[in-house]
Image (cartoon, rainbow, N blue to C red; front, side, top):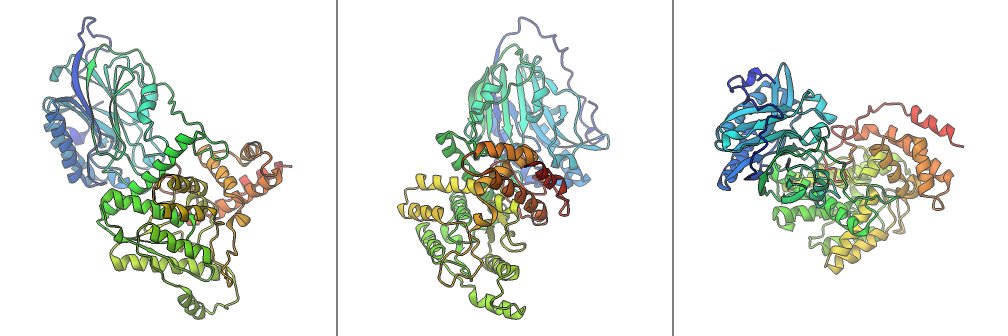
Length: 614
């Protein structure tokens, strides 16, 4: 690869020996390897990110490490189209200069946007003993990356380590490119990554890597972390070092630690490509996003909650707030949002007094949910607060000439929009932000009020199916020592799901969501297979008819599936202006990095498939 103009001050890459020119009598050599992410930073805060990278370089030098691996794009973070701007590229160039000068006596691998031949690449640079010696461009790009970067080509980079006293070679590569990476020529493989956190993988990741790369001599993995965006995902900053498939060091997710290990470099291995991952994840047939095994499902639930909480904590820290508002309805979604918020405040070490949880009873609020909202706030150690919306709604209906006995869309949506207005205005008043509670299932079905509960300042449930929320809250019941909290959570789990937007003069729940949309067990099954496996309606129907045999009649499955696709297409306009929110299960309907679709796309191609079902 020729050095790009923007890096023309660098010397030419150090030339490696011929691929198979290694001496047969090379002696094994021991050295310290470190891998991990910068401990702080933010997207596009290049000065701060560079400072955090240099802190890792100093940490590696203090540990007498010869190799330091950092994640992809750690200099800039993922910052969208601005990574193509000359000002940003110049700042990254300056940062690379600074980092390279500090690499005396070691190899430092780090990622940044890289300009070459009129294109911008997602690139890894290798700084060896004070200068840049190699670069490699990422070949496998994710959907959103194609809007910013050009895909690279060619082989990964080999770096000769003899300038730092090691008679071996290191292979520099992106983790996503490893499926077609040859490891024959290297004793050390350094794989940089930017993999979002996903429930079910955080604790098991070292074992998965160990099985996949068992035949490689020494393998190091470093994932993006604290200086990455939380717009639609959260990055765990984990790192692993393996030798012959054995875990030598592991920096756990969200720990902000480094993996550090003394390894022995010997002759290269014979592995051509990585083996398939074996995470041990066997999906639940009816909830295929969750593990079938009870112990694994419990860990999956805890990790999903932790990922969402880490995302919220990072967003709060990054924008400098210590207070939030959220509505407490006594239902599943607001309960999940509260549990996430409580954990985020623990992560940040903040006083729970900064959580302004509000019960906002409207015209359809039942006695049961209102009572549970109060009990939940009390059990969580919060100051219970209530703002009754009925007078404000009555005035609003009078202002727009809405008849008091006309229970139409305006009647229902006005209540959801009034709640959002109160929560956002209260957030402004206390100098915080509103935490949203809308979930993935409601977003898919459009069962959310545009400009009402579909909007927030950060939507912590946006990547969670409704049935996943039920599983997570059930696990919270098992995990908590707070018996008062456990009792109210159990009652919330037992409460019929309802938007509570129709009048309930006798205090009963008059709307039942699953009577309108169908069982969430079905709709979440449809959604998962549609998003994750891109399955067509007929294939989804056949799978559902088999999995739910004897539980739901085939005709009901057909009716609910057709309604699912009808609702999904007609509701895209709501999803095309979603607030930020994490994707703990690895699935998102965000138009930015999850699922893109025109708001006025026709559904006929999908709905016509139902004519084939008899």
